[in-house]
Each structure stands twice: as C-alpha cells, then as structure tokens.
Length: 262
Image (cartoon, rainbow, N blue to C red; front, side, top):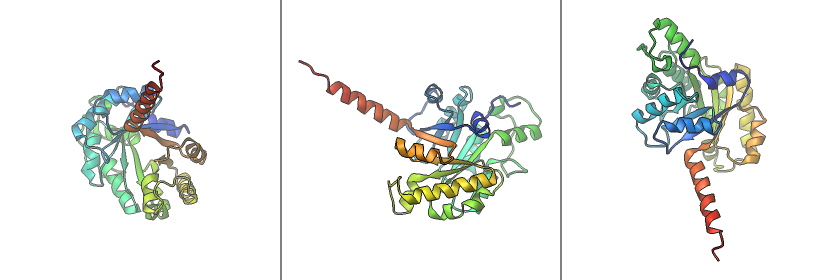
C-alpha cells in the first residue's frame, strides 16, 4: 500500500464529488490544511496563472501529502518536465491546460505515467511513498494507480475532439476550462449561454463512454453551478484563494463601514 493514498481518485471512483481549492496567492504549506478545514478534497497548485517557483509548489505538495488533501498541480504548458519535476517532488496529480487533440492528450499521459502506460522517467525513492525502499516495478505501478491526470478542454476544437481525447488510456479527468472556452467562442463571461450546456453535455457523454470523470472549472454563479453539477460533473473547483480572500475582505469592510458611530 502507498504511504499516501490519492483520496481524490478514491472519491471519484466511488462516485463522490471531489472539490478543489485553487491556490494562486498561497506560498506556504498551511494552505493545504486550510483547504482541508474548509471542506476541500484537493488543492490546485496553479502554476499556469501565478508566479510561484517550482520549489514553492513542491513544498505545498509535500505539506498536502501529510494533510489528507490531494496535491494537484496545474502545469504551465505541455513540456514533459513541467509535469515530471513536480510529480518527482510530491504532486499526486497533474492538470494539463489547453489540450486540443488526442495527440496532445497522449503526450500528457506519456509525461505523467510510467511505462507501460506512459513514458515518465523512473528515479526511485518517491516522497509520495514515504521514501520507503520498494522494488521499482511495484513503486511505479503504485504511483500510476495513484497519480491523477486531468486534461483541460478550453477551445471549440477540443470540444469537437473530446471523444478521441477521452479514449486515450491513462487519462482520469476530462476537465472543461469554461472561462477560456467562452473566450475562444466569442462569448466571454456568458456562462449561461446555451452553447455552454451543449459543450458540457458532449464532454460528459464522452467521459462516461470511455470511463473517465468529467470536470468543470470557471463557473461560480450558485444557480448555474447547481445546474451544471446535476448534469454529471464530479471533479470541481470551488474558487481560488484570491477570490475567497477578496470576497470575505470586501464583505467585512462593507460591514464595518455600515456600523453607525453616533
């Protein structure tokens, strides 16, 4: 058994929701415990949209391993080392942005999964396994089983290719980046547009057909979130640390300014 089990994959395989907190501001490991205390199952260490170093990202991942929250890194691009370095450092999942074709999805699998599933380089002595000595064949098999791979579909091209993308072995989650998808469609910010529901339906159907999990990001309106959740999404981001801080800080400032002083 692995020293740390991927609880997010376990929940998804059981048919449960897996809720993620996006980390854009946080730079310390206590963000993982904050995620757990606030009811989240995983953290998205967002290396696409912030300036944190790889060393900081890995420190957060290691802290998450000990907190029961799954450390998942959204990498900045498609180079194999974007994924392999954070996986070697402690991440238990990778989100690859802007995947448009089956070829790009296959490359993501190659970078994140060990042979025979992919082509990730073997090094031995993995922090996810508590640095316990273990035969490499057993270690790589265990890590493949516990490493979540999500590919993000963020363009009309990606939605059109969703069936061929979802068919690639080694992918766990087909994750829609709704904000970028709408921007690419010329519908920026129109999360209630009928074309969104059509795209979601296509993604969910392909995910079910190929035994993957459907994920959704970007939608924050409670009513729309509930509507789309009921369609079949299971891998979800609630919002970012930046958004939650801004929301709470704004509400507190407004509350205090509203106190009568006479």
